[in-house]
Amino acid sequence: KQEVTQIPAALSVPEGENLVLNCSFTDSAIYNLQWFRQDPGKGLTSLLLIQSSQREQTSGRLNASLDKSSGRSTLYIAASQPGDSATYLCAVNQGGSEKLVFGKGTKLTVNP
Amino acid sequence: DTGVSQNPRHKITKRGQNVTFRCDPISEHNRLYWYRQTLGQGPEFLTYFQNEAQLEKSRLLSDRFSAERPKGSFSTLEIQRTEQGDSAMYLCASSRSLGYTFGSGTRLTVV
Image 1 (cartoon, chains in turn cyan, brown):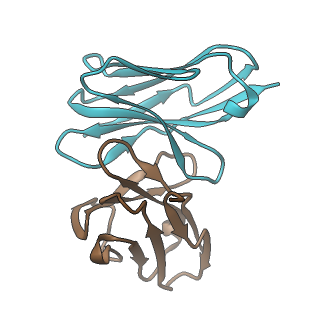
Image 2 (cartoon, rainbow over the protein chains, first blue to last red; image 1 turned 30 degrees about the horizontal axis):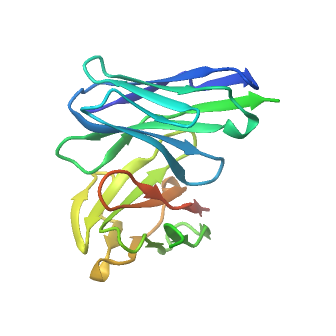
């Protein structure tokens, strides 16, 4: 059974700092991995999707990497801003299934 | 196209009542998903439709839960005889190929 773990559970940083969020998964037979952002009481916004054959994806100040063999992904956020404050969720799509398996998320607070 | 729409946004119901939620996906998306999220947890998969066919269901989807997607457009999720443990955010997402678009969710509170 696939399990996704996100560390840390919560992170507080001053504005302008670069930071890394971690995601690990137990079964490396994944189809793709996605990072989402969730604001309090809201739905999920897709940030980046990395297919199993890719090593990284970039969008603006965000960079996500994938090491399938070790079961790890990182989300790097450069020059953090207070507007980046949210919960960041990692999810994997297992081959042979349409479902996403999510971690519990990392709650990020960027202080002005 | 305004994205994935879910109604209602909030629902408070008494234990034992039936509730129904609606999801309107992005029009050209043939895939539709339901997830459930409780406080402090990531979303958990409930079910998946491709067009009107329900192709995958989680064991979380007990016999009190039923989902439909008539004509492959909007979808409904019904919970019969609600229990306090059903209190959660119910999220709908749609997709055409890779990547998901989620709606804002329906928050259910069972009292």
